[in-house]
Image (cartoon, rainbow, N blue to C red):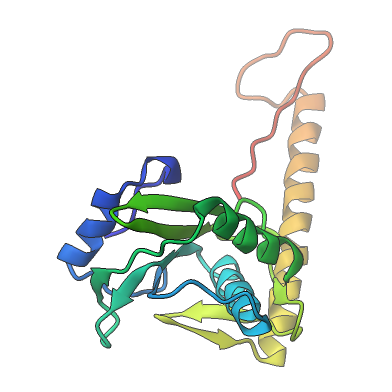
Length: 201
């Protein structure tokens, strides 16, 4: 089970459902009982978890859900801190503690009885690989844990990233060439054309 795609619609009931169904931590889901601290370790943990998800298939980090020692959600532990301040603090780490920044990351405090639960949604990034600026380490999510990339894996990640950009440029050049030569599925009227390419990333 995963949270709804639209993070703005997530409610306490969705978090309660994770606990009721004893959902496991996974490649896409990470439970944290406590909020990260304001110290260097807390900042490092936020950056590391964000990088790990962004360098893979994305996922949700949920602060305020305790796991049972076997990686299953066991209970909600809301925190009483000012939710706006906590959201800004996490966003600040994501902006300054990761290189390059992760596009599209979202942070939302979910109101719960006696406090809040924080959901950090990290998309699979088209700008990867990302690294933690404090340690210069590249990490990925593997199963229910994070692990550092080896040197060959880092090299491969950079090559794949460069290759993706070249594939997009080649695709565009081919399509423009077909339009200019009139080789389109349907005839086009003479005159100016507006060409829109949608590239899933």
